[in-house]
View 1 (tube, rainbow, N blue to C red):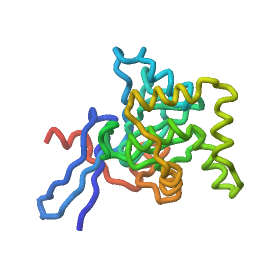
View 2 (view 1 turned 90 degrees about the vertical axis):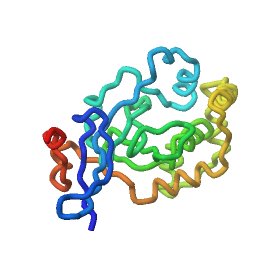
View 3 (view 1 turned 135 degrees about the vertical axis):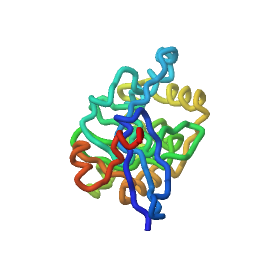
Length: 220
């Protein structure tokens, strides 16, 4: 039988989980927990792509944010890379993801405490927000079982942003993204599924139902 042991990345400088065998032969799965912030490198912060994401997709990539600004504790680890204008945050679950990889799903944590998985990987997430920046509205419509028209929602984006489609193309060309016709279907499947991670109010709360590998264990 396997047991889980959590390693706090907030205290152990981005420690990563792995498995090992205890003295009595029992397999123990060590996984990373907590949150880290993945900022845009300073030499890239003036790139136009980040301004386009902020204006077209309400996605502001992290620059000066710190873990202390996000008052929650995730299990497993959440690597926060962006926020929206309301302060809701987005990150890869279980490790730090890359556009070219598909190792880690993307999750969100809202200011009101709600959370969930959005996509299976970072590229899928960027395709979603680039071509369907009104994805939050779709979730609300789905939850209330209200009718909605995606074409009308798309055209509404141009009311306050006449360059919407031009900027969308720029984002797609820069990151080599293409429109995925299944983006909304994948979004709704992820939102409706049981989250692959849990958000606690604090580490102390997480410790009530999880076992942590204390920092001193690394020095034994």
